[in-house]
Image (cartoon, rainbow, N blue to C red; front, side, top):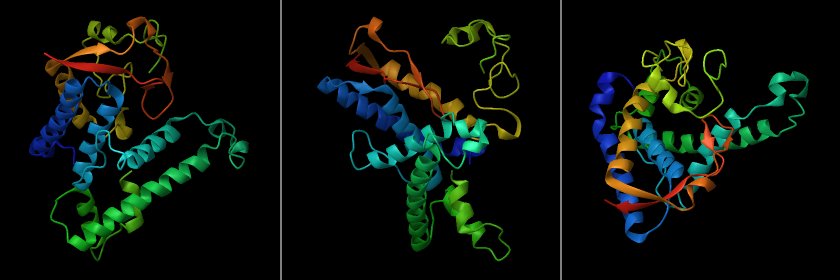
Length: 255
């Protein structure tokens, strides 16, 4: 799904999602409403993935009806990315002292319920969207298939101080001085997507989308902070991906 040929063929989907992001920010600029940058980027990314996998949007900007889906995805990401004492002390596994296992089961039960609904709808409609789910369903229905419905549901789912000065500090400009460092798993000084067999399969998509999403926000609008720049909280919180503890909010203005 993320090969160069497939990504070239699906550029219309990416253009559509970025246009929706632009429309949402434009509406906020006209009303003087602040934009939660992380939430807007997450909604765009989630819809891009869901359109690629399921041929549908999972979330809408400022929509209560889609908030549940976003909460489930956020919950799964936080549970998977949170440090679990039981991983370091297996004797605590049955006790689940942090409640991470319990919360993870709840979120995955909700997520699989959503996947079940999507699969049922695909089976009723007979397909025709040419997405990943339909490809997996087709494989599972073959006589010699080794995939079950349960398999289909599950398939949908560096800070080294010796290498970097102030390795825990947020200094993205450091990578401009090391232009020979490749982030695609070849240099272990910087492996945001992992490396080898466990490298993130969505890397080619991220490589195309991050620049376009950032350009959509920066080149089409001016931005003003809701608070003074000195008051911005730069603390982070645990999760599958690094995120700010307090979301960055800014007011877009017309250029």
